[in-house]
Amino acid sequence: MLDARTKTGQWRQWYNSGRPHSALGYRTPEEFRDGVRIPLLKHGQPSTYRRRQENHRRRRREANEPSLYLRLALT
Image (cartoon, rainbow, N blue to C red):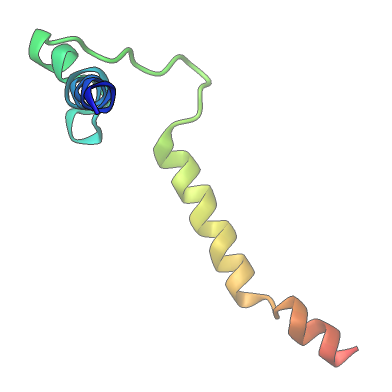
């Protein structure tokens, strides 16, 4: 039981202080507290915004296509 408590305490310490949090811009609480900034994207590296746009377009295209089940039923 003592081992489980020790491991749980270690995990809780890591979860609350060593793990990047989305609310903190994917920084650890220590990095956020110390003002560590995440480096900007390098030239040519895809941004999240661009990937989201591409995913949105793809999903809209797929939504307008007949489903595989329907295509098989029509053949």
